[in-house]
Image 1 (cartoon, rainbow, N blue to C red):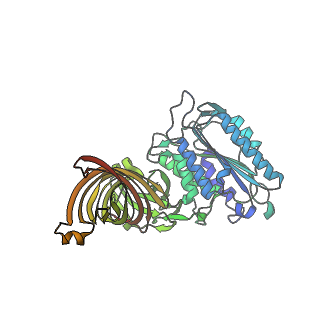
Image 2 (cartoon, helix red, strand yellow; image 1 turned 90 degrees about the vertical axis):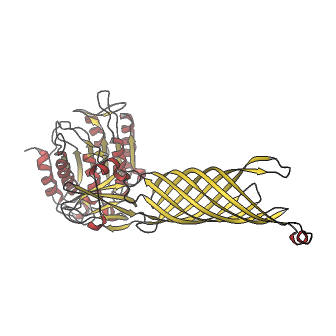
Image 3 (cartoon, rainbow, N blue to C red; image 1 turned 60 degrees about the vertical axis):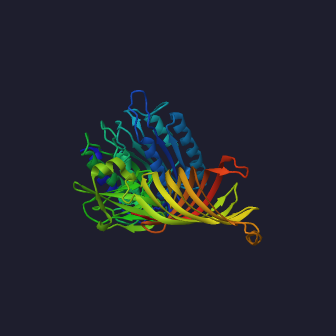
Length: 527
């Protein structure tokens, strides 16, 4: 039987004994990571689509849940073998300084890209696996974990060894671990649906809580590998070739190697139990954050943000919207999901809008420059439509304010508004949008001459009514915060340059440009 078939059982036997021990928070272990992604290999490799994005996902989950600070999580994307070796050398120096002070360190090395039987491929050359392993061996970390998401290369199995029982102070594991995305002769597969490789998708999902089968808020090496192995193998049966992740372990000690702490996250998704599969998309970026199965762990730790959860049940697909911009726990039920076609989900992913329309009122002030108008009040409503990061909408407003010159004073009222298009970014818990459009205005004025009483006594008319139209470009920005699942509040600002025809005192007409700035506050209801 192949090692890849024995590895899930062996890992469970090796690491299943002491689930309450050897956490970094308890032992004081310092954690480091070197993370490498390479979409482009050598001249004979087809470019990959998601390797560098996968590297960023791994770095993010290690920083948020794996107790690796961003300063100690070095990212080398699209670089050269020399860049990888320099990152390892920098990490080696940092770890050596710690171990010299009597502290323990854990190193995680991750690679996503092309490879062959002897090397990993980068755009500027190949990195020999033998040389990589030699460089890793020179780093004085207590535990070194290497995860290689590339085509499998043959090598001698290190085997699995378990050291003798030791005291609690020295009980944490020591040694090396290497996890490969596939077995000898197999390809590491990418998925357009997942926007990444099968193996890394389940690696990240597992560290976010998908592998936490005992639901204690921690994911151990044994739990993670068993989860990644089973899920990758099962999903690859739907493709052209099977993919068997493999595990080589050379560890002593009887403690657990805890790789992530989902319980430390500030935002969680919880799904119902059952045989359904749940894909979690980040809104805005449309990337897949993780996956859950109702038959396994039911909670997924996610960064605060807005998500689209797609449920697969047999041949049917349904989706639910989740707002975790402020963190917390959201427990989904079957009533939260709305049926959609699988083709629609495949085409739009996390850009699918269940409630693309927003309608709501707003109030604000107009600051007008270059004319007789003073500050005016504005009130109106806005209707907008969203698809992914794209926004399109129209607003209509009523404006009232005063006009004052040396010769006249009075009131001005106007109807104004127009269409716009924009782009929106989700920066949890807020959303930031910028737009540009056209503003059209029709204004009417009721003016009264200065010294009206004296002029009336002389039977001179003092009232005058005027009307004018204006049109011009408008740009705006808005900052939106969620208040509830379908309700949000926004702080907005816009600037317009209105062009209108004006007649001077000598009877000549000219086109005048009048700038208008408008800050306002708005609420919106999604439907």
